[in-house]
Length: 304
Image (cartoon, rainbow, N blue to C red; front, side):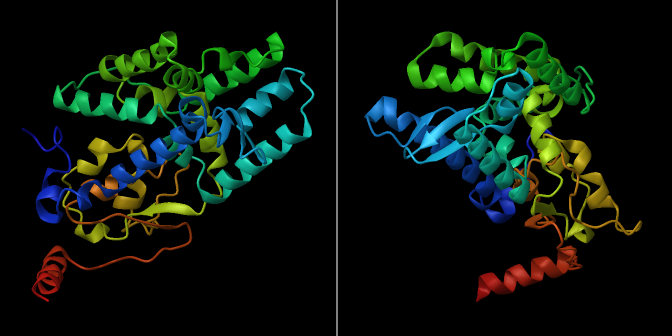
């Protein structure tokens, strides 16, 4: 089996399965935690967060509103209440400070669906597909906003797979799972990472928010890169890697500054040479340790 079909195999062999999957596990726990905030009420009678990711009230005190939903409401001509304005401001400020695309990889319930499709696509060795451009999502976002303005409704929320999946899981509404199933099939057979990487208007919106976020991935150990391509194989936004990973001679920072990066951490997990790490956007430090030096240091650490 080729490495591309089984990325991370070498990392698991060298560093152990837990280390080579730590950020994947962390993301799944994060997504589960967000879901349980909403599920605790209808399932167990303990109401922590009432609503969905589109709009909610936490502990009957903290309002949270998806800024994209809020923007659609404004364009539809709805007069927002003060709680909605406050909720949208809180969410927008948080993602602008941290990293807009963490919503996609650490919160969104569709992410496990698309990750599963990507895994199945590699295992089935499906190479060909519709070559969509990443910028296509911005045209979809524009269409969503135009639909709100023209119809006077928050039209996208009627079919938003994020919202419908939550409702389907929380209340057992079977049609709510249909969108997730269609996205899985689309990503598996039509386009690699098609939904999250090329179509989703929510991801497009949070990409625009992701111009100031502090949380970044750095290819600080790029001197150790052996071109195994595992990071490219697992990255949902492959185009963000090369400038940071291969830009040393051109004087390019090792920080992955592209706003499309979802900060999912999969490149960190699967890299056997530990080229990548999480850091903040102004950290330009470069680790010039060679593979042999890294291996020797690891051997000494294990011996100690």
